[in-house]
Image 1 (cartoon, rainbow, N blue to C red):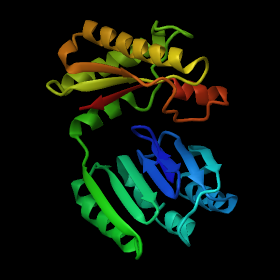
Image 2 (image 1 turned 90 degrees about the vertical axis):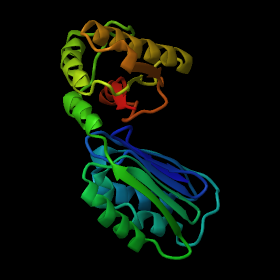
Image 3 (image 1 turned 45 degrees about the vertical axis):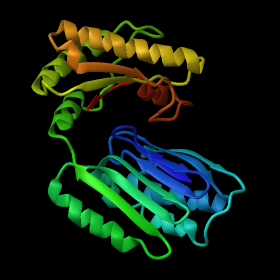
Length: 256
């Protein structure tokens, strides 16, 4: 299985027992490729295709090689569907488990859904089967995403105290959130992998709550805001570098 993830605006590829899965297929944030493939050759073929489509600097390799079985020609079939068309899909997930292919996600333009669907249907040949579910992206989510602009809402090190740069971004987010009044928005906290997973989970929850508190003080209706902390479970960059850890310490906003 392979799964590609781009976190909300991220792709996730997870390879596990012949499964390839790609989540969040837009650019701007790194794509985490993780999971299990049967051999080094399959791993290299998939990574090279990812590099060609998204650029090596956008792909974080977390694929593992283990003795799992795969259908004949599996890696070729997987790489065939890793195309530039995936860049059009937001909050998406492409998975290939054995011979079952599934693609879900959102597209900014309603008119892109039919040709994109047809394109992927033409790529799939027997014995592979395709289940595809694409829908138009919410206009409200675009308002929020455009306001955040992939910026990191920073906190003081190891604390829930917002840095000055973080409050500046949240002042802009308050304006955007009031534009989508009536829609519930989830504030999601993430951390890097420094420290214990349990403490990171708590820290991410507390930071999300701190963001909610700040926004309500800026007159964003509290009833429309919920919070969730995911700790270090959904990285968008490599935790082995300073820059990667900084990108992983983030807050996301998801229109419900």
